[in-house]
Structure formats: structure tokens, C-alpha cells
Figure 1 (cartoon, rainbow, N blue to C red):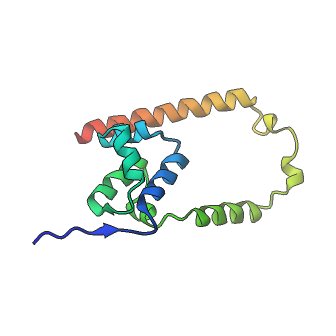
Figure 2 (cartoon, helix red, strand yellow):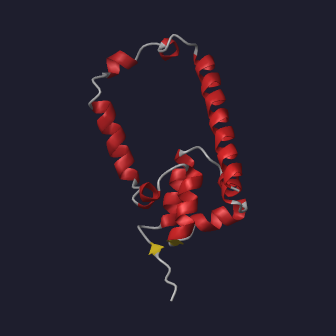
Figure 3 (cartoon, rainbow, N blue to C red):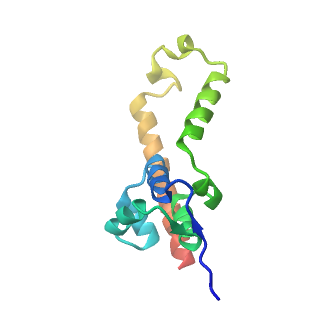
Length: 133
């Protein structure tokens, strides 16, 4: 007898959507990674329950762990972010200066380098995905 496990931890579809957005992916990009359409991703994000096998595929496509996706809570993200910044010893006076020179790089150059890194990561992700197929 085949059993299907369902994970219903406060609406899985909403968690998938929030993690997707935090990772900077569009529905189309997530759909491409899963081999489904943008519309199917939209429908999935409106679904309260997702079976564990599909959840594993989604977590892999989002670049997070399955447990991380199951246990995702926005409040924890906010709490951890606030605690990190509160306990890092940086005061608002220390960061209120000219942020463009923070890393001795102009802001435009920093953005350009970040976009290049992001593109390389996407290419690496596609290569790994192709190797699995």
C-alpha cells in the first residue's frame, strides 16, 4: 500500500512563494527549474499542502534544504536578521556615512560585480541541473 506524506506547516505554498522571492527568483525561473509552467508555479503557491517528494524537488530548485523549507517562518528570518545586526557591534553612526565608499568600490561597480556573480551561480545551477538529467 502506497502512502503519501503531506506537509501542512501553515500553508506550504506561501512558504514556497516567500522563499522564492527571498532567493530573487521569478515564477518563470522556478518553473523552468522544476520543468513546469509559470501558471503551475502560481497554482502551487496557492496550495496549502505539497507532497514530500514534490517538496524535495522544490527545495532543490530553490537552493534550500527540505527541512529549511518546511520549517520556514518569516518571523524567524526577521528575528535572526535583527539579532545579527544588533549583536554585531555596528552602530547607526558607523553606517550613516557615505555607503558608496564602504568597500572602496563605487556602488555601481559593486552592483555590477554582484550581478556577474549571480549570473555565474545561475549558470552553475543550470549545469548541475543538466547533468542530473
